[in-house]
Length: 336
Figure 1: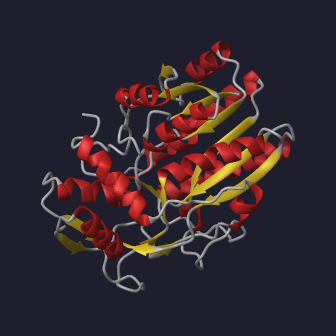
Figure 2: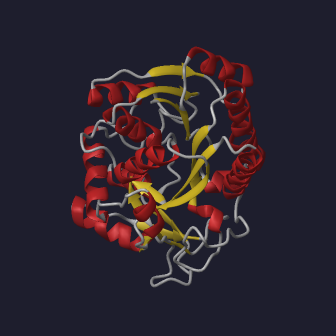
């Protein structure tokens, strides 16, 4: 199939593009490189030996997106493009609504004009809010605790309403938990700009001496050690979840939701201990106040994806950290 991947030069996007190319699909990527690198796509081609057609631009620009569809016979869209930092969204909500919601509306208008009605959306476990754990796809979506989560919930609603209005649409909603890890080759991985918002890249910068210590936001949560608990999933398992859902929605119509996680929750201190064990490096850290918008715990049930998509995460936490360290060893300053 011919797949358009928005945000395909980003962390999750590049790993998904590798999986798509290895599965025999043709891929074109749209990216504005606001938090990604052109080097990542060159690395994708090194890994797969296959080319990717790139269009540099913003999905908020309808005319640009319409031209992409006019030039390519697209079968399915996989939609990653958007801003993703919870803390930043609290400080800059309007930017998040513009990029994540307005951008998706622009994309959907272009898809509709081109007659492309199959889409996989990169959603988030944050739509569950302060839910009872573990969360399943039947769990009610809670009140969003931050603008980032609100944008994901709004886009899910837009896609549901489109699929209800026009039964020709096929929509797959993938609710991610916490992706970490890197490609086994060490050629692609997470390379955030500035001070990282996510735990593993932050740990890596401390290990390299680029930051003096790790800040742990909150040690008074109602968890086993007071720090936040999350369901961490290897980015390679997450990428395989996209090809599995692509196979599913390509054969049907309607609106479908799947959690992509491991079903296991690890605290921040668990991650630090595992990182120290595998890297053999002590990680200094300091506790700070809770970060606005964060919740205490979030982990998943995975049975629905296992049954409907024949998909299950297979990489362990040690795999995730080992592959991250391999990426770090080969790319101590990321793609820079």
